[in-house]
Image 1: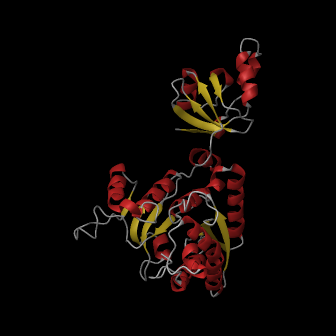
Image 2: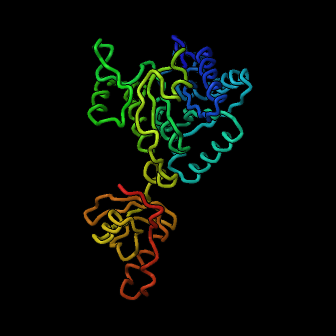
Image 3: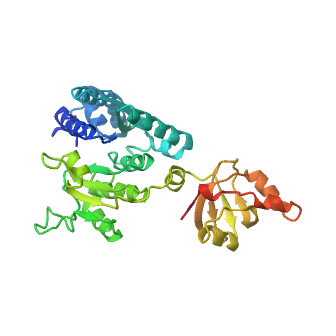
Length: 352
């Protein structure tokens, strides 16, 4: 969206976006901008005649372009008396609890001081190509992290249609959707084809679904003179609004567990523990654990599975794998009080 016809960075588009963000800020909105454009900003500095196609070329262009991109935003925002800051993130930030919390705290501090955070994937060191698909999925994760009121995904199509509007003149736009049905996702995937992961509509629908799971409503559409970011935030934009504005946002720890955390072990539980977890919302007690897999310390993330290895929950263990195995081996000798200490407290469990 920030590229010129030839593939380079469009400073005109940056100025237009910053003008609209300035309008939002003047109305009291807090704005976090997730912006691509580093590769587009930097590839000509490397001598490429057009946008590079190799991973090495893209990453080198991003290394140069990140500074140019944030400088362009800095200059544009300064004309409105505003300041901005850059955060470069990778997927690992969302899987590491400390980095996840540090990112949240940094964003909150910037917003508190009326500074616009500009977030981009750290493309120059990302190990799995440009993994967030032009930042659509990254923006969904960030919206959940900060408990955003609305995620706005800007594209060149004014929303989601019941069929391809380029092929069918009678295609009708969905102005509002409570959710994204699976059959709609499949239909958009078929139409988008190879555009998956390149910022196409299917990429945005996947990001929207993730944001909805995190409790954040979504707008997919376009901006123009009548559909500004301010108009979009007020519910009258040219596009499709998805989800319930009153949707419950998951607590930050449970959100991290369900969408980002990586388990370092697994606990197999008996039928009684399954019932206590799924039907009664209880903590997991040692008495319900029948098997311990992996090696982990206290505060590690563990999967909780049934005896036929069906994943039912994930949580943070208060007991190390070694101590828990010892408890299970000495089940008949341990005092009764031992079995009342939670292995995984209910406040740190997410159910699947």
